[in-house]
Length: 528
Image (cartoon, rainbow, N blue to C red; front, side, top):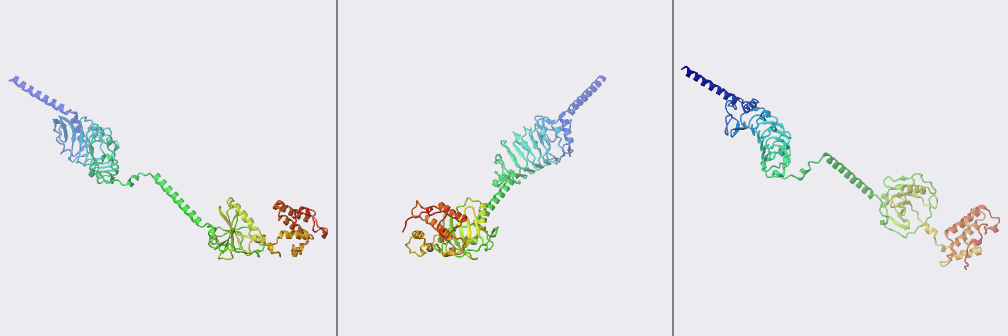
């Protein structure tokens, strides 16, 4: 009896020891310890995760005794804490120690704060964070090194910033859901095969990568400005959005330069219109109109400084003339007076007063403006009864204009080459032969004007005129070989002048001789 009682107590002690051993073994399970530590970081877990018990085995085949855990072949592989009203913080550091963890799903809860640093769990194949209140920007390396992950769900949160480019380095990624957030910028160019993406209702813009053109248009709807397949095509102007500020500045400067060139060109064209036209286009009214000079202007010292017409570019050297501008000169009726090797002369009838003469020169194109002005200033100072005074002038590189008053009574040519046959001889008489005979027979009274020596104090005035007459006859020699040229005639005239200044004639008998010039110096042909 006593022996059986001892055996009964021994069995009870052994059972108690076995129970304690089993309990002790289950209490020291590292997965259980880590899971309890993770649960402690969560809030509102009493009702949802209350059946977690360290005395109960976690997995039985593919079934989990603990709520919210996923098992496969008796092994814990993931968290499925969905729609449990959970909040708080996801203790990623603790979960990273669960080497068998492959999936984290906390969708439809109340988690908030920054994006969890899931890259610490390198073996994850799925991250499901949709329908929470996570916020903030995702680091560009948020998924760096996660080579095994296949699905990432982050829809309906408050994430901002750019889509991380580290997603491009996940070779096995097949599904990415980022809809209903606040992502901005452009969509990265994903190259994964059989890839599905949803970025609807964000703030994305720019062209959709061509690799995603086969996606549904609903996956890109509700963004700021996405274009390209499967959305509407991008307008050409969109491609120019990336123009730098420097390019805009350069374009503005270029526009200003072009505008300045256009304005300067228009200014030159406007000035060109005011330049004188060709005087040859003026109407020729009376080409053979004759006139003779009889009134020369009195001596008047011109002003030292010339003035310029206010409206045109005519420079006036005489202040006693009424001013007019170049346009008045061009509008005035004109007739050609004559032309020569240097240019042409025109008579212009101005409405403001007397007619004027315009001499147009084209053979002085090499003369500079300053030199031309200096010559005109000197010419304006000339004053002589037989010199027509300069009124104004015009300078242009291609042509020059001289303006003088018009004087009737012919031209200088008509006076120099007058009709000498009117000297009392017939139209067929040879004046040179007649003068030669007069000189030989000393009938000088028929040649010289008696009034030419009435107001002179020189005793040898008639003799001097006779010698000048002989010089002129040598210039009219019929034999061209014996005819004097201009230089030789000029030397004889100078000798005659020097002889007249150095000595006086002694008697009337010497009036027809000269100490410096004798009859042998002259050439006379034997004519009638």
